[in-house]
Image: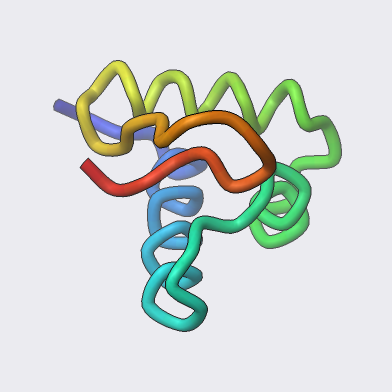
Length: 68
């Protein structure tokens, strides 16, 4: 499995946020951290990470992903 640089950045962002706060960052927080201005672009990358089995949805709401 080969991740793009952007996917690596997003995964790192999620790991760091969970380590610091105990919860996943929002789409907006992820976008700000990795330089994406569109929530749909962040969502697309999260779907790719989910397809790779690296993250999973944990319900609905602003902080819906968890590490798999």
